[in-house]
Image 1: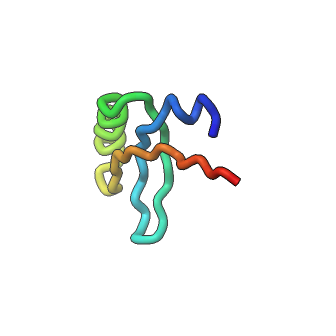
Image 2: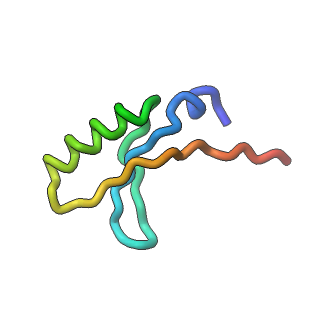
Image 3: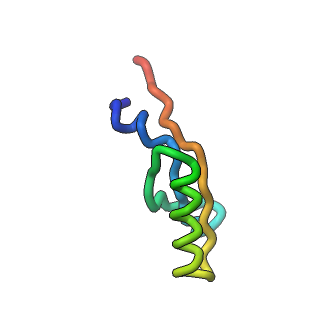
Length: 61
């Protein structure tokens, strides 16, 4: 895991279906992610978005 990945644990996902979600963008804070999601919802009212804490798990091996 890189240092840069540690800096952006909050992500906005576009919910396509029950099995496919697309990461739209990553942010340092939850408030930034929620603000961006509100803008996206205003631009695309028919699309579902969700803010999640998505910190990658480091695999040791």
